Image 1: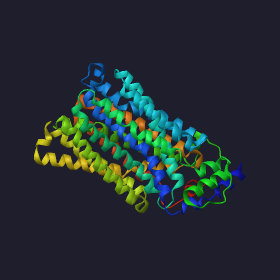
Image 2 (image 1 turned 90 degrees about the vertical axis):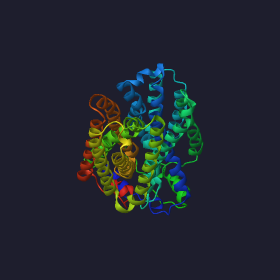
Image 3 (image 1 turned 120 degrees about the vertical axis):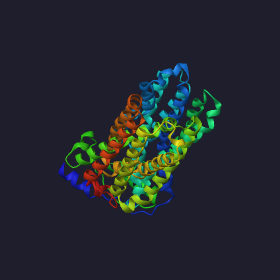
Image 4 (image 1 turned 180 degrees about the vertical axis):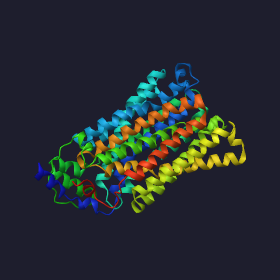
Amino acid sequence: MQKKQKAAKTVSYSALDNAKTNSNHYRITLLSVAGTFLDGYDISIIGVALTIITAISAFSYANTPLGKGLMAASTTIGMLFGALSIGYITDVKGRKFMYLWDMVIFIVFTAAITLSFNFWSLFIFRLILGLAIGADYAIGATIISEITPKKSRGKFLASDGMAWWVGAAFAFVVGYLLLPLGVNSWRVMFAIGIIPAIIVLILRRKVPESARWLANNGQVEKAEQSEKSITGKSDTLKATHNKVSFFTLFEKKYIKNTIYFGLAWFFYDVAFYGIGLFTPTILILLGLSHSLSILGSAIFSSIAIIGSIMCILTVDRWGRKAVTILGFAGMFVSLLVLAIIAMHTPKDAFAVGITGAVIASMYILFELTQSWGMGSTDFVYGQELFPTTVRATGQGWGTSISRIGAILGLTTFPTIVALYGLGYGLLFFAIAGLIGLLLTIFLAPETKDKSLEELTEQ
Protein backbone atom coordinates (compact mmCIF):
# COMPACT_ATOMS: atom_id res chain seq x y z
CA MET A 1 0.00 0.00 0.00
CA GLN A 2 2.84 2.40 0.89
CA LYS A 3 4.49 1.79 -2.47
CA LYS A 4 1.31 2.61 -4.35
CA GLN A 5 0.83 5.85 -2.44
CA LYS A 6 4.46 6.87 -3.02
CA ALA A 7 4.18 6.17 -6.72
CA ALA A 8 1.01 8.22 -6.88
CA LYS A 9 2.86 11.27 -5.56
CA THR A 10 5.34 11.17 -8.49
CA VAL A 11 2.64 11.43 -11.16
CA SER A 12 2.88 14.71 -13.07
CA TYR A 13 0.31 16.16 -15.43
CA SER A 14 2.57 18.95 -16.69
CA ALA A 15 1.00 18.80 -20.16
CA LEU A 16 -2.21 20.00 -18.53
CA ASP A 17 -0.82 22.06 -15.64
CA ASN A 18 1.62 24.12 -17.72
CA ALA A 19 -0.37 24.38 -20.95
CA LYS A 20 -1.25 27.66 -22.60
CA THR A 21 -4.97 28.27 -22.53
CA ASN A 22 -6.63 27.35 -25.80
CA SER A 23 -10.06 26.94 -27.37
CA ASN A 24 -10.50 23.48 -25.82
CA HIS A 25 -10.23 24.92 -22.32
CA TYR A 26 -12.88 27.53 -23.09
CA ARG A 27 -15.16 25.09 -24.92
CA ILE A 28 -15.14 22.46 -22.15
CA THR A 29 -15.52 25.12 -19.46
CA LEU A 30 -18.50 26.64 -21.27
CA LEU A 31 -20.24 23.27 -21.55
CA SER A 32 -19.48 22.52 -17.90
CA VAL A 33 -20.72 25.81 -16.45
CA ALA A 34 -23.90 25.49 -18.52
CA GLY A 35 -25.28 23.26 -15.77
CA THR A 36 -24.71 26.01 -13.22
CA PHE A 37 -26.37 28.49 -15.57
CA LEU A 38 -29.44 26.26 -15.63
CA ASP A 39 -29.38 26.04 -11.83
CA GLY A 40 -29.29 29.84 -11.57
CA TYR A 41 -32.16 30.06 -14.01
CA ASP A 42 -34.28 27.42 -12.26
CA ILE A 43 -33.70 28.68 -8.70
CA SER A 44 -34.45 32.27 -9.72
CA ILE A 45 -37.44 31.57 -11.95
CA ILE A 46 -39.25 29.85 -9.07
CA GLY A 47 -38.91 33.15 -7.21
CA VAL A 48 -40.84 34.81 -10.03
CA ALA A 49 -43.27 31.88 -10.34
CA LEU A 50 -44.11 32.05 -6.63
CA THR A 51 -45.49 35.56 -7.13
CA ILE A 52 -47.94 34.03 -9.66
CA ILE A 53 -48.91 30.53 -8.49
CA THR A 54 -49.88 31.67 -4.99
CA ALA A 55 -53.00 33.16 -6.59
CA ILE A 56 -53.98 29.80 -8.19
CA SER A 57 -56.31 27.65 -6.07
CA ALA A 58 -54.57 24.33 -6.91
CA PHE A 59 -51.29 25.80 -5.62
CA SER A 60 -52.76 27.78 -2.74
CA TYR A 61 -50.62 25.99 -0.14
CA ALA A 62 -47.67 27.92 -1.59
CA ASN A 63 -49.30 31.01 -0.09
CA THR A 64 -48.56 29.85 3.47
CA PRO A 65 -45.14 30.56 5.06
CA LEU A 66 -44.30 26.83 5.21
CA GLY A 67 -45.61 26.12 1.72
CA LYS A 68 -43.68 29.04 0.25
CA GLY A 69 -40.51 27.86 1.98
CA LEU A 70 -40.98 24.24 0.86
CA MET A 71 -41.58 25.23 -2.75
CA ALA A 72 -38.60 27.55 -2.75
CA ALA A 73 -36.43 24.80 -1.23
CA SER A 74 -37.75 21.87 -3.31
CA THR A 75 -34.95 21.82 -5.88
CA THR A 76 -32.44 22.51 -3.14
CA ILE A 77 -33.58 19.42 -1.21
CA GLY A 78 -32.97 17.33 -4.33
CA MET A 79 -29.52 18.88 -4.73
CA LEU A 80 -28.67 17.86 -1.17
CA PHE A 81 -28.96 14.19 -2.11
CA GLY A 82 -27.91 14.44 -5.74
CA ALA A 83 -24.62 16.26 -5.23
CA LEU A 84 -23.15 13.84 -2.70
CA SER A 85 -24.44 10.54 -4.10
CA ILE A 86 -23.84 11.32 -7.77
CA GLY A 87 -20.54 13.03 -6.93
CA TYR A 88 -19.41 9.71 -5.48
CA ILE A 89 -20.66 7.84 -8.56
CA THR A 90 -18.67 10.30 -10.69
CA ASP A 91 -15.48 9.34 -8.85
CA VAL A 92 -16.26 5.64 -9.32
CA LYS A 93 -17.71 5.52 -12.86
CA GLY A 94 -15.95 8.47 -14.46
CA ARG A 95 -16.63 12.15 -15.04
CA LYS A 96 -18.29 11.82 -18.41
CA PHE A 97 -20.79 9.09 -17.47
CA MET A 98 -22.89 11.36 -15.23
CA TYR A 99 -21.91 14.47 -17.20
CA LEU A 100 -24.43 13.34 -19.80
CA TRP A 101 -27.05 11.59 -17.69
CA ASP A 102 -27.62 14.46 -15.29
CA MET A 103 -28.58 16.67 -18.24
CA VAL A 104 -31.08 14.05 -19.42
CA ILE A 105 -32.71 14.09 -15.98
CA PHE A 106 -32.80 17.89 -16.07
CA ILE A 107 -34.61 17.93 -19.43
CA VAL A 108 -37.20 15.27 -18.49
CA PHE A 109 -38.20 16.78 -15.15
CA THR A 110 -38.19 20.38 -16.30
CA ALA A 111 -40.73 19.25 -18.88
CA ALA A 112 -42.69 17.52 -16.11
CA ILE A 113 -42.73 20.76 -14.07
CA THR A 114 -44.52 22.57 -16.89
CA LEU A 115 -47.33 19.98 -16.58
CA SER A 116 -47.70 20.18 -12.78
CA PHE A 117 -51.33 20.15 -11.64
CA ASN A 118 -51.08 21.03 -7.93
CA PHE A 119 -48.66 22.09 -5.20
CA TRP A 120 -47.34 18.60 -4.41
CA SER A 121 -46.79 17.51 -8.02
CA LEU A 122 -44.78 20.67 -8.61
CA PHE A 123 -42.86 20.07 -5.38
CA ILE A 124 -41.96 16.45 -6.28
CA PHE A 125 -40.92 17.24 -9.87
CA ARG A 126 -38.70 20.09 -8.68
CA LEU A 127 -37.20 17.87 -5.99
CA ILE A 128 -36.16 15.25 -8.58
CA LEU A 129 -34.89 18.02 -10.85
CA GLY A 130 -32.63 19.01 -7.97
CA LEU A 131 -30.86 15.64 -8.17
CA ALA A 132 -29.59 16.55 -11.65
CA ILE A 133 -28.63 20.09 -10.71
CA GLY A 134 -26.76 18.92 -7.62
CA ALA A 135 -24.92 16.33 -9.71
CA ASP A 136 -23.79 18.97 -12.17
CA TYR A 137 -22.23 21.03 -9.38
CA ALA A 138 -19.92 18.11 -8.62
CA ILE A 139 -19.28 16.95 -12.18
CA GLY A 140 -18.85 20.21 -14.08
CA ALA A 141 -16.38 21.81 -11.67
CA THR A 142 -14.36 18.60 -11.43
CA ILE A 143 -13.96 18.39 -15.19
CA ILE A 144 -12.86 22.04 -15.37
CA SER A 145 -10.29 21.65 -12.59
CA GLU A 146 -8.74 18.53 -14.09
CA ILE A 147 -8.15 19.96 -17.57
CA THR A 148 -7.13 23.60 -16.93
CA PRO A 149 -3.60 25.03 -16.33
CA LYS A 150 -2.67 25.62 -12.68
CA LYS A 151 -1.89 29.32 -13.17
CA SER A 152 -5.36 30.07 -14.53
CA ARG A 153 -7.37 27.28 -12.89
CA GLY A 154 -8.98 29.70 -10.45
CA LYS A 155 -10.52 31.94 -13.10
CA PHE A 156 -11.89 28.99 -15.06
CA LEU A 157 -13.49 27.54 -11.93
CA ALA A 158 -14.77 30.96 -10.80
CA SER A 159 -16.59 31.25 -14.12
CA ASP A 160 -18.87 28.51 -12.75
CA GLY A 161 -20.10 31.03 -10.20
CA MET A 162 -20.59 33.69 -12.86
CA ALA A 163 -22.71 31.26 -14.89
CA TRP A 164 -25.14 31.01 -11.96
CA TRP A 165 -25.69 34.74 -12.01
CA VAL A 166 -26.05 34.94 -15.76
CA GLY A 167 -28.75 32.28 -15.41
CA ALA A 168 -30.40 34.17 -12.55
CA ALA A 169 -30.41 37.48 -14.43
CA PHE A 170 -31.77 35.74 -17.52
CA ALA A 171 -34.54 34.19 -15.40
CA PHE A 172 -35.67 37.54 -13.99
CA VAL A 173 -35.63 39.16 -17.45
CA VAL A 174 -37.63 36.25 -18.89
CA GLY A 175 -40.02 36.40 -15.93
CA TYR A 176 -40.55 40.14 -16.35
CA LEU A 177 -41.21 39.80 -20.09
CA LEU A 178 -43.63 36.88 -19.67
CA LEU A 179 -45.72 38.36 -16.85
CA PRO A 180 -48.26 39.78 -19.36
CA LEU A 181 -49.12 36.19 -20.39
CA GLY A 182 -51.09 35.91 -17.17
CA VAL A 183 -51.79 33.09 -14.78
CA ASN A 184 -50.03 30.32 -16.77
CA SER A 185 -46.96 32.36 -17.67
CA TRP A 186 -44.95 30.43 -15.06
CA ARG A 187 -45.25 27.24 -17.14
CA VAL A 188 -43.65 28.96 -20.14
CA MET A 189 -40.91 30.33 -17.88
CA PHE A 190 -39.86 26.81 -16.90
CA ALA A 191 -40.24 25.42 -20.45
CA ILE A 192 -37.70 27.92 -21.78
CA GLY A 193 -35.01 26.25 -19.63
CA ILE A 194 -35.34 23.04 -21.66
CA ILE A 195 -33.93 24.59 -24.84
CA PRO A 196 -30.34 25.30 -23.66
CA ALA A 197 -30.29 21.96 -21.79
CA ILE A 198 -30.88 20.01 -25.01
CA ILE A 199 -28.12 21.93 -26.81
CA VAL A 200 -25.67 21.31 -23.94
CA LEU A 201 -26.48 17.59 -23.85
CA ILE A 202 -25.67 17.21 -27.55
CA LEU A 203 -22.39 19.14 -27.33
CA ARG A 204 -21.18 17.44 -24.12
CA ARG A 205 -20.88 14.12 -25.93
CA LYS A 206 -17.58 15.29 -27.48
CA VAL A 207 -15.91 16.25 -24.18
CA PRO A 208 -13.05 13.81 -23.35
CA GLU A 209 -12.84 11.87 -20.10
CA SER A 210 -10.49 13.30 -17.44
CA ALA A 211 -6.88 12.12 -17.85
CA ARG A 212 -6.48 12.12 -14.08
CA TRP A 213 -9.48 9.83 -13.58
CA LEU A 214 -8.35 7.52 -16.39
CA ALA A 215 -4.82 7.17 -14.99
CA ASN A 216 -6.14 6.48 -11.51
CA ASN A 217 -8.23 3.68 -13.01
CA GLY A 218 -5.33 2.08 -14.87
CA GLN A 219 -6.24 3.41 -18.33
CA VAL A 220 -2.90 5.09 -18.98
CA GLU A 221 -3.01 5.08 -22.78
CA LYS A 222 -6.45 6.71 -22.81
CA ALA A 223 -5.27 9.23 -20.21
CA GLU A 224 -2.36 10.28 -22.43
CA GLN A 225 -4.73 10.56 -25.40
CA SER A 226 -7.05 12.74 -23.31
CA GLU A 227 -4.21 15.11 -22.43
CA LYS A 228 -3.17 15.32 -26.08
CA SER A 229 -6.74 16.02 -27.26
CA ILE A 230 -6.84 19.09 -25.00
CA THR A 231 -3.30 20.52 -25.16
CA GLY A 232 -1.65 18.79 -28.13
CA LYS A 233 0.91 17.24 -25.75
CA SER A 234 0.95 14.37 -23.30
CA ASP A 235 2.99 13.13 -20.34
CA THR A 236 4.34 9.66 -19.70
CA LEU A 237 1.77 8.74 -17.10
CA LYS A 238 1.53 5.96 -14.55
CA ALA A 239 -1.44 4.01 -13.27
CA THR A 240 -2.13 4.85 -9.61
CA HIS A 241 -5.21 2.80 -8.57
CA ASN A 242 -6.02 4.83 -5.43
CA LYS A 243 -9.24 3.65 -3.83
CA VAL A 244 -12.42 5.73 -3.99
CA SER A 245 -13.82 6.08 -0.47
CA PHE A 246 -16.13 8.69 0.99
CA PHE A 247 -14.23 8.41 4.28
CA THR A 248 -11.09 9.81 2.62
CA LEU A 249 -12.67 13.21 3.24
CA PHE A 250 -12.37 12.60 6.99
CA GLU A 251 -8.80 11.36 7.06
CA LYS A 252 -6.39 13.48 9.12
CA LYS A 253 -4.88 14.99 5.97
CA TYR A 254 -8.21 16.33 4.69
CA ILE A 255 -10.49 16.72 7.74
CA LYS A 256 -9.76 20.44 8.21
CA ASN A 257 -10.48 21.11 4.53
CA THR A 258 -13.68 19.07 4.73
CA ILE A 259 -14.94 20.95 7.79
CA TYR A 260 -14.09 24.38 6.41
CA PHE A 261 -15.51 23.79 2.94
CA GLY A 262 -18.80 22.34 4.23
CA LEU A 263 -19.44 24.94 6.95
CA ALA A 264 -18.34 28.03 5.01
CA TRP A 265 -20.57 27.11 2.07
CA PHE A 266 -23.38 26.21 4.52
CA PHE A 267 -23.46 29.68 6.09
CA TYR A 268 -23.01 31.39 2.74
CA ASP A 269 -26.09 29.60 1.39
CA VAL A 270 -28.17 30.38 4.48
CA ALA A 271 -27.94 34.05 3.52
CA PHE A 272 -27.53 33.84 -0.24
CA TYR A 273 -30.44 31.55 -1.11
CA GLY A 274 -32.82 33.37 1.19
CA ILE A 275 -31.92 36.77 -0.24
CA GLY A 276 -31.54 35.57 -3.83
CA LEU A 277 -34.75 33.62 -4.17
CA PHE A 278 -36.92 35.96 -2.14
CA THR A 279 -35.56 39.16 -3.70
CA PRO A 280 -38.85 39.89 -5.53
CA THR A 281 -40.80 39.31 -2.29
CA ILE A 282 -38.38 41.48 -0.26
CA LEU A 283 -38.62 44.32 -2.79
CA ILE A 284 -42.43 44.14 -2.65
CA LEU A 285 -42.26 44.33 1.15
CA LEU A 286 -40.05 47.41 0.76
CA GLY A 287 -42.70 49.12 -1.37
CA LEU A 288 -42.09 48.22 -5.03
CA SER A 289 -44.86 47.04 -7.35
CA HIS A 290 -45.03 43.42 -8.58
CA SER A 291 -43.53 44.13 -12.01
CA LEU A 292 -40.89 46.53 -10.67
CA SER A 293 -39.83 43.98 -8.05
CA ILE A 294 -39.10 41.48 -10.85
CA LEU A 295 -37.23 44.11 -12.87
CA GLY A 296 -35.30 45.16 -9.76
CA SER A 297 -34.32 41.55 -9.14
CA ALA A 298 -32.93 41.33 -12.68
CA ILE A 299 -30.85 44.46 -12.07
CA PHE A 300 -29.45 43.15 -8.78
CA SER A 301 -28.59 39.80 -10.40
CA SER A 302 -26.74 41.66 -13.14
CA ILE A 303 -24.67 43.38 -10.45
CA ALA A 304 -23.76 39.93 -9.11
CA ILE A 305 -22.40 39.09 -12.57
CA ILE A 306 -20.02 42.04 -12.20
CA GLY A 307 -18.90 40.67 -8.82
CA SER A 308 -18.19 37.25 -10.28
CA ILE A 309 -16.21 38.83 -13.13
CA MET A 310 -14.13 40.62 -10.49
CA CYS A 311 -13.48 37.24 -8.87
CA ILE A 312 -12.34 35.82 -12.20
CA LEU A 313 -9.91 38.74 -12.55
CA THR A 314 -8.50 38.55 -9.00
CA VAL A 315 -8.71 34.98 -7.68
CA ASP A 316 -5.47 33.83 -9.35
CA ARG A 317 -3.64 37.04 -8.35
CA TRP A 318 -4.91 37.83 -4.84
CA GLY A 319 -5.54 34.25 -3.82
CA ARG A 320 -8.63 32.27 -2.85
CA LYS A 321 -8.59 33.20 0.85
CA ALA A 322 -8.38 36.98 0.44
CA VAL A 323 -11.20 37.03 -2.11
CA THR A 324 -13.43 34.85 0.07
CA ILE A 325 -12.81 37.03 3.14
CA LEU A 326 -13.74 40.12 1.13
CA GLY A 327 -16.96 38.44 0.04
CA PHE A 328 -18.15 37.43 3.49
CA ALA A 329 -17.23 40.83 4.96
CA GLY A 330 -19.31 42.62 2.33
CA MET A 331 -22.25 40.28 2.91
CA PHE A 332 -22.20 40.85 6.67
CA VAL A 333 -21.99 44.65 6.52
CA SER A 334 -24.65 45.08 3.84
CA LEU A 335 -27.13 42.69 5.46
CA LEU A 336 -26.63 44.25 8.90
CA VAL A 337 -27.35 47.74 7.53
CA LEU A 338 -30.42 46.47 5.64
CA ALA A 339 -31.69 44.77 8.79
CA ILE A 340 -31.35 47.93 10.86
CA ILE A 341 -33.12 50.00 8.19
CA ALA A 342 -35.94 47.44 7.87
CA MET A 343 -36.48 47.53 11.64
CA HIS A 344 -36.88 51.31 11.73
CA THR A 345 -38.54 52.36 8.46
CA PRO A 346 -42.06 51.95 7.03
CA LYS A 347 -43.04 49.50 4.32
CA ASP A 348 -42.73 52.12 1.56
CA ALA A 349 -39.05 52.70 2.33
CA PHE A 350 -38.12 52.98 -1.36
CA ALA A 351 -40.38 56.02 -1.60
CA VAL A 352 -38.21 57.82 0.97
CA GLY A 353 -35.31 59.43 -0.89
CA ILE A 354 -32.19 58.94 1.22
CA THR A 355 -33.44 55.71 2.85
CA GLY A 356 -34.23 54.25 -0.54
CA ALA A 357 -30.77 55.18 -1.80
CA VAL A 358 -29.10 53.47 1.18
CA ILE A 359 -31.24 50.33 0.69
CA ALA A 360 -30.30 50.18 -2.99
CA SER A 361 -26.62 50.74 -2.16
CA MET A 362 -26.58 47.96 0.43
CA TYR A 363 -28.34 45.57 -1.94
CA ILE A 364 -25.70 46.40 -4.57
CA LEU A 365 -22.89 45.85 -2.05
CA PHE A 366 -24.39 42.50 -1.05
CA GLU A 367 -24.73 41.24 -4.62
CA LEU A 368 -21.29 42.53 -5.62
CA THR A 369 -19.35 41.00 -2.71
CA GLN A 370 -21.20 37.71 -2.27
CA SER A 371 -20.57 36.79 -5.91
CA TRP A 372 -16.99 38.09 -5.74
CA GLY A 373 -16.33 35.86 -2.73
CA MET A 374 -17.84 32.51 -1.73
CA GLY A 375 -20.40 32.69 -4.51
CA SER A 376 -17.52 31.95 -6.89
CA THR A 377 -14.76 30.48 -4.73
CA ASP A 378 -16.99 27.60 -3.60
CA PHE A 379 -16.32 26.12 -7.05
CA VAL A 380 -12.58 26.78 -6.70
CA TYR A 381 -11.96 25.50 -3.17
CA GLY A 382 -14.02 22.34 -3.70
CA GLN A 383 -11.64 21.22 -6.43
CA GLU A 384 -8.35 22.15 -4.79
CA LEU A 385 -8.88 20.72 -1.31
CA PHE A 386 -9.39 17.04 -2.23
CA PRO A 387 -7.49 14.36 -4.24
CA THR A 388 -8.52 12.98 -7.62
CA THR A 389 -10.04 9.85 -6.06
CA VAL A 390 -12.69 11.88 -4.19
CA ARG A 391 -12.62 15.27 -5.93
CA ALA A 392 -16.20 15.06 -7.19
CA THR A 393 -17.26 13.53 -3.87
CA GLY A 394 -15.62 16.45 -2.04
CA GLN A 395 -17.40 19.00 -4.24
CA GLY A 396 -20.59 17.02 -3.70
CA TRP A 397 -20.02 17.08 0.08
CA GLY A 398 -19.75 20.86 0.10
CA THR A 399 -22.76 21.21 -2.18
CA SER A 400 -24.88 18.91 -0.01
CA ILE A 401 -23.96 20.63 3.26
CA SER A 402 -24.57 24.01 1.64
CA ARG A 403 -28.03 22.88 0.55
CA ILE A 404 -28.90 22.20 4.20
CA GLY A 405 -27.95 25.83 4.82
CA ALA A 406 -30.03 26.92 1.84
CA ILE A 407 -33.05 24.95 3.07
CA LEU A 408 -32.61 26.50 6.52
CA GLY A 409 -32.55 29.98 5.03
CA LEU A 410 -35.43 29.39 2.64
CA THR A 411 -37.76 27.83 5.20
CA THR A 412 -36.79 29.99 8.19
CA PHE A 413 -36.85 33.41 6.53
CA PRO A 414 -40.61 33.48 5.68
CA THR A 415 -41.44 32.35 9.21
CA ILE A 416 -39.20 34.98 10.84
CA VAL A 417 -40.69 37.69 8.61
CA ALA A 418 -44.23 36.56 9.41
CA LEU A 419 -43.59 36.53 13.18
CA TYR A 420 -41.11 39.36 13.75
CA GLY A 421 -40.80 41.38 10.55
CA LEU A 422 -38.38 41.77 7.64
CA GLY A 423 -35.63 43.35 9.76
CA TYR A 424 -35.13 40.28 11.93
CA GLY A 425 -35.14 38.04 8.85
CA LEU A 426 -32.30 40.09 7.38
CA LEU A 427 -30.45 40.07 10.72
CA PHE A 428 -30.60 36.25 10.65
CA PHE A 429 -28.83 36.33 7.28
CA ALA A 430 -26.26 38.89 8.51
CA ILE A 431 -25.23 36.59 11.37
CA ALA A 432 -24.73 33.75 8.86
CA GLY A 433 -22.40 36.01 6.84
CA LEU A 434 -20.40 36.86 9.97
CA ILE A 435 -19.91 33.18 10.84
CA GLY A 436 -18.72 32.47 7.28
CA LEU A 437 -16.22 35.32 7.60
CA LEU A 438 -14.76 33.97 10.85
CA LEU A 439 -14.51 30.43 9.45
CA THR A 440 -12.56 31.69 6.45
CA ILE A 441 -10.18 33.79 8.52
CA PHE A 442 -9.28 30.92 10.86
CA LEU A 443 -9.65 27.75 8.75
CA ALA A 444 -9.30 28.47 5.03
CA PRO A 445 -6.01 27.51 3.31
CA GLU A 446 -4.43 29.30 0.34
CA THR A 447 -4.29 27.10 -2.77
CA LYS A 448 -3.30 29.30 -5.72
CA ASP A 449 -0.43 28.55 -8.15
CA LYS A 450 -0.15 24.85 -7.26
CA SER A 451 -1.03 21.72 -9.20
CA LEU A 452 -3.85 19.55 -7.89
CA GLU A 453 -1.29 16.90 -7.04
CA GLU A 454 0.86 19.34 -5.04
CA LEU A 455 -2.20 20.44 -3.05
CA THR A 456 -3.32 16.92 -2.17
CA GLU A 457 0.03 15.07 -2.24
CA GLN A 458 -1.17 12.70 -4.94
